[in-house]
Image (cartoon, rainbow, N blue to C red; front, side, top):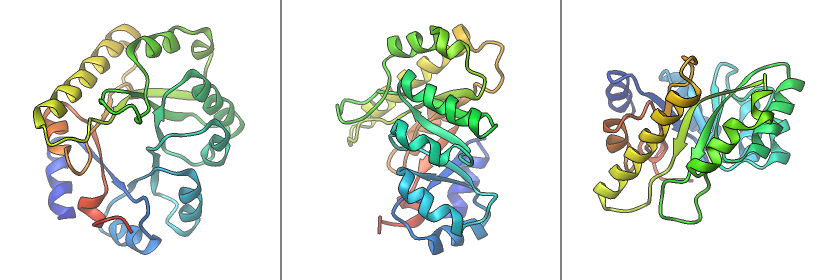
Length: 217
């Protein structure tokens, strides 16, 4: 399943982030040996437990909600943070990236689903963030695109509509704020249950766990 999925995504220029949350190091290594390098974790504590036991060339993606007090632990090595949902969090990432003497790639997470439990910015909040003097002064974070999670539903059209909305937000931000920024190119949307719809609607990065690793441990 992994090889077929990877080949399908590669042929369309989509990055596969293998979501390894709750799965042991041995399973991650098995997928790593088959060529996978991008892995996603939801929780900082779990990531910190696994990373020292795995190859250094893994590109780690933090895809879950991130608390500001946890940023310092992952700043020295994280490849991309998908879940920036406030200016306060982005300021902390900037602070810790500066201490680590590196630039951290980030995605702005948008709330596109019906569920109130999901995190994310509104369009107005994102524009306020991007227009703020605090953001304009940042030199150690790089916003590379957007992320969102669709409603958990069997209604494929609803999911498609939410992904279309995220794509339109991406296009609007790119035109308004990132026209001269070639790195602003990522749309992280799509998981095991809806990745095909996401890719059809313009996803450049899908976050897939159970289709690769099986049910959560």
